[in-house]
Length: 313
Image 1: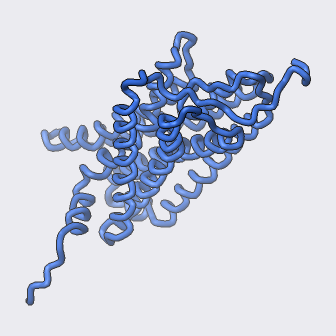
Image 2: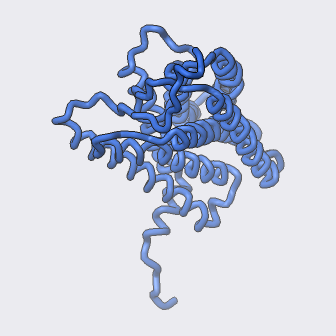
Image 3: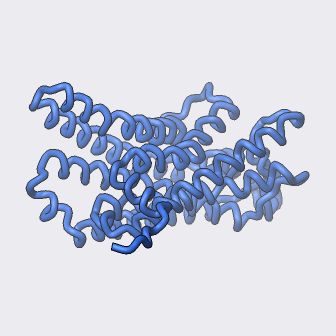
């Protein structure tokens, strides 16, 4: 396409969710409640871990980072979605779209790496309890977090720079509720083969490998527990791994299905619902799955809201 047939796109229009007008208010309240629940739950976890000295351990340090990632991940898309649901012109600037895409990728990748680190932490704690403190030292925990942040920065920046080099023609309507990478590629009038190749290759590294490592870690955990056959051991294995794996499968399954194994028969509605599952539902569920079922977190929560005892000794 020649240069004179191209126009400079200064903003995009986000179509959002295909919700009938009469149901807009209902879904607005629903999404607002889910977003506030996500914010409150994850913020409460961060505060509890910071205030309670019993939680100053590698496991809870990783959990605190995961809660921060979930809090930010949800905040990348939800405020704009809620704003656009109340707006007659649901637009986003070109620069704002690229920025949203960068932070979306950053916190999605960060969650992926942190889930791997937490699975490794549980694997060491259950399979090598006597060596846990030496293997999962504070220094190693910090290294895992720092490496996660560095890798996610590189990956998100790579895709953002590759997207910034593309040209966008007259069509500026994104059939999504945020600046999704695949939706933007469909609007581009440039050659997107390099972008698609990088998505496939880097996606395999960032998504598939961590997912396999998590599955292997939990498989080893279950195998280690079942070596001592007892009803208590079986219950512990499933309670430890079942709920965690359900959230992990929800997150990785939808992301891998959308970006690495896209189907030509996928409708916009189906892709939007799948995106909602890992951008909204997963960050909301994580505080309940990873923390509020935890005995130490429950004790910290009780002590936080328990009034101090001023009775004389």
